Amino acid sequence: MKTERRLKELGIELTMPTAPMANYVNAVRTGNLLYLAGKGPGLPGHPLPVGKVGRDFTKEQGYEYARQTGLSLIAVMKAELGDLDRVKRIVKVLGMVNATPEFGEQPEVINGCSDLFVTVFGERGRHARSAVGMGSLPRGIPVEIEVIVEVNAGPARASAAAASRKSAGRAKRKSAKAKRR
Image 1 (cartoon, rainbow, N blue to C red):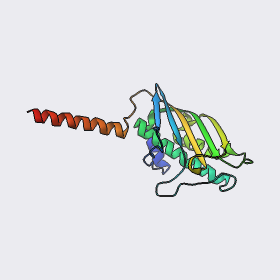
Image 2 (image 1 turned 90 degrees about the vertical axis):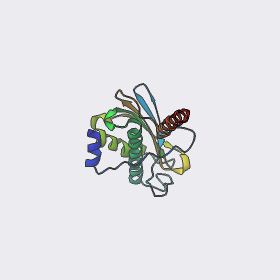
Image 3 (image 1 turned 180 degrees about the vertical axis):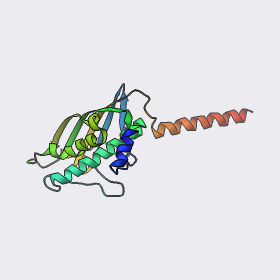
Image 4 (image 1 turned 60 degrees about the horizontal axis):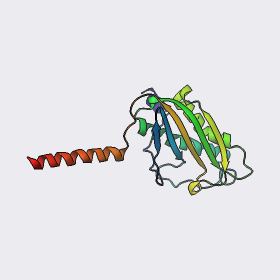
């Protein structure tokens, strides 16, 4: 639990991952890779930030939104893996910035997420990356980031919905067995 201890040292408390906004899941694991769906910034209890970097937000504000997004992505990793020490390496980050056509500092914005990953995971957080500008992003958010993570062996944690279905199935079988007696 070294990574969890590191988060605590940094004063970072992860929130529960947000539910997907459409017909997809937060993460898919295949082999030793975990693909995380794109996430955007936003803090629980606060309105979703909406606007373009270079017009409505500064580069520095964009950096903070990318950092917030990185925290959301780490929360997804934790929910999927159970233990953040199972993150072997952050492999690839795709950072998308909702920006004005003349804005060209997308890398500096996405550094908010990249810097966070290196601070939290150390060398395991260094990754390949693309940082691109977009004409728009879902709901008008300023930043969206998706990540590919290499994980150490071990089962992926069952989603809450799958665990609930499994538990309901056990209870149903138990009830049926009791009725037969």
